[in-house]
Length: 143
Length: 242
Image 1 (cartoon, chains in turn blue, orange):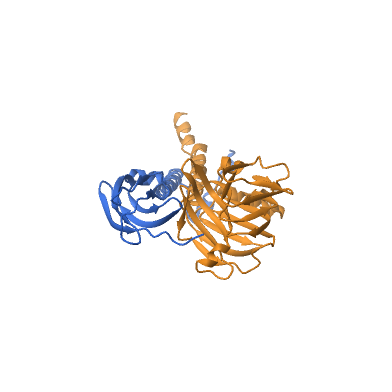
Image 2: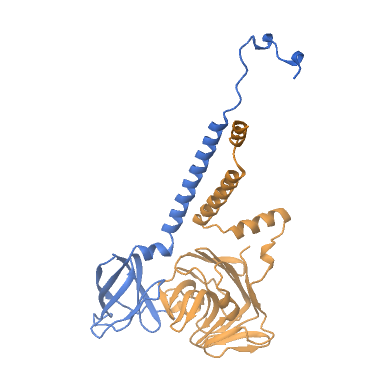
C-alpha cells in the first residue's frame, strides 16, 4: 500500500471501526446448533422406538390364565390367541387355560371356537401371571 | 507463517460441519414424519402430483386381474372358484387369495372390485392386509353381508369390517352399517382404501364404512363366500393410494 493510500487520523474522529466478527464465537454457536439438532434427533429416535414392536419385546413378558365357560356356565374347550402375535393355547377339559411369554402391556386375548372369536382385553405384567377369572364365550349369532 | 496458517484454519465452519448439519436435519425430518405416520413416498407422490397436475404415482398398478386368462392369479384355500363369462365366481363356502398381493405384502393400497353381482345367499367378503398361514387367515375383511338381516340389521343386512385371527372371524366388527337396498342382482363397484391405520369402504363411489385399527400392518387380498352364496366379479385391481 502506498503511503498516500493509508487512512488518515480524520477517518477515525468518530472512534475506531467495528472489529471483524469473532470467528471463534461463530464456530461455538454453530456447534451449539449441531448439538441441539443431535439432541432433537436422539429424542425423535427414542419416541419412534417407544412406539415400536421392539419396545414391547424389551419390556418383558408375562403369563395369563383363566377359565372359559359357555352360555350355561359349563367349561368350554376352545382356543386362546393373543391378537397380533403367534401365541396360542388350548383350553383344557375344565375350561382352564395358561399362556406364557405374552408381551407385557395392554393385549387383547381371543377366545375362539372353530369359526368365531371373542375379544377380552388384558393388561399383562412382566414376570407375573395375570389371573383373568371366568371368561364367558357366547358364539355370537353371525352369518 | 505458522500463526498465519492457524488463523486461516480457524475461520468459519468446515465443510464437514455443514454436511453434518444437513444430515442431522434430514434425519430429524425423516424421524418426525415417521412418528406422525406420514410416508416419504406419499409426500414425494403428492409433490409430483401438485407440480405435474396429475396423479403420477397412482398410475402404477400393484396387482390386477380381469379374469379373462383363467384364475391362475388366485390360490384356493377353500371351495371351488370358477371362471364364468370372463368373471371370477365364488359359491357356498369359498376362500381365495390373490397370489400377487400376498407375495408383495403391501401396507397401503386401494382394492377395486368391478361389477360385483351377488345373485343369492348370505354374502361375500374381501380380505385385506391378510396373511394366510397354516392356521388360517389373519387380517381384516370387508363383508357385504345381507345375512345380517337375521341378526339385527333388517331388511337388507349390513356392510361390516372385522378382524380375522387364525381362520376365525372376530366379534365384534370394527364398523358396521345397514345395506341401503339393491342387494341382489345389481352390479356394485367395491373400493377399499387401506391407508396406515384407517380403512375406508366405498360402494358405487359412496363411503359406507370407515374403521381404524393397528393390529395388522401389511398383507394381501382375498375373497370369501359362505352358506348358499353365489357371487361374481368382472375385474380386480390393487392400486397405490392416490
